[in-house]
Structures are given as structure tokens and as C-alpha cells.
Length: 294
Image (cartoon, rainbow, N blue to C red; front, side):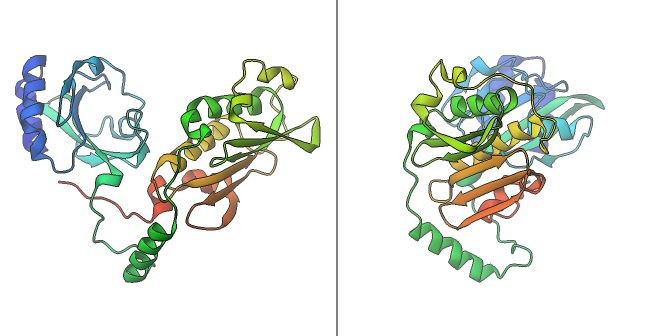
């Protein structure tokens, strides 16, 4: 990508030429899903270039909040992002980021996105794990775990999580459990903590859903902040959609004790503090080691 960045520097102000260059060089980056350029402020200056098209509709979008942007600027060396969920595909993704510099003038970056599920597994052994044993268990789970079947929740996962986030933040819900496969959600409200209400996704998304609960301030007794709640729900989405065989069956969150509950297709149920849950890389749940790129 260093050579590509040099060519990009020569055409940086020629947008059509830049798009053509990225398209011509796309095949030189193995396993690349998307190639594009952004300026030093995180604004996309090129089109989205893939193997099949040059899509100019994405030119000008603000990418300054992408995971790689926050950690990279003002660094000026090649880096790989952590695993994050692609807004385009909904799949786990990593980005290779190469600075574009013209005679010591920092112009921006050329970025290559990779779908984690399409990358070859690294040969680097996973620390503290018997590599051969892990590969055996990994393949066994893939065979035994049924392929994920899209549920009503999967079809409306963005809207569902947004409703849950608002119910927790503004309507006194302190505990919720998502049963992803069945498309059901269980809610406990702070004014009636001994009873739960069970909703289908269609009920949860009804415009009058919020009328079922009184609006109230976020409780001071909560261990988790509203920001942590939002991040946990976003992580649930990633774990649900990450892989067709390794996926989240059910997830729960309790803001009062700060615990997150998880049930996967390939393992039993487990509980852990929210801080530990959020500190884990998405890839760590699926046993994928770091991916190296040149």
C-alpha cells in the first residue's frame, strides 16, 4: 500500500484520476473488499472502489468517527484498525490505513477495507491455547452449530436496539433480555421490578410502545452509564451478525448490577461485568487471531 499511496499523492487533487488509479490498483491488494481515500480531517475524497464498481455516492462523507480515524490522526504510519462492524455490509471488518504524503506534506490516507470472514486464518498460534486443539474444536463447532436463520429481530435489529436503548435511558427499564432467534424481548421496569413483560419484535416497534412505560430520569442507582448501555447494545448487534455459524442466541443487560449475559450458538450461557465485555475485541469471541497485512 506504500506504493499506492505514492501514486495517490500525485493525483490527490484530480478526483477522477484518483478513482481510476484506485480501480486499476484494486487487484494488487489481496482479499480487499473496498478501497478509498480520505483527507487528513476524515472526509472521503474518492469514490468507494470495489472489484465491480466505482461508486461516487460515498464521496464527501464524514469518516472521522470510524475506529481507525480516532486512533490514527495525527500519526503518519501504516496501521491496521481493530475489528469493527461495517455500516455497509453489517459484517466484522478491519481497515488497513496508509498515509498519503507529498514532499513532507501530509494529505490524508488511502484505506483498504477487509471483510474478516473472507480473510484466511492467520498461522500465528493463539496465546495460551493449543493451536491444533483449537482448530479441531473450531471446526467441530462449525459442523455442529446450525447455520443462523434470519429472525424477525435480525430483519429489524437496528430499530429494535434503538428502542431498547431509549427504554433503558428514558423509561425506567433496568433489565432486558433479547432472544435473538425467537425474536422476543423481555423487559423489567424499575417501578415494577418483580414482573417482566414479554414482547415480540413487532410489538416493540409499534409507535405506541413508549406509552406502556412512564417517562423518567435515568436512575442514579445504575452502575452503567447510558453511553455504556448504547455500546453494549451495539456489540450485541455485532455478535449476532458476525458469522453464520458462530452467533449470539441471546443477550441480556442489567444496569443495576452491571452484568451482561450471553448465550452463543457454540457455547453455554455466561455472565460478565459490562466493562470486561466492552474491553474484548469482537474477533476474540470467535477465536480469530490478529490479521497481518503489508
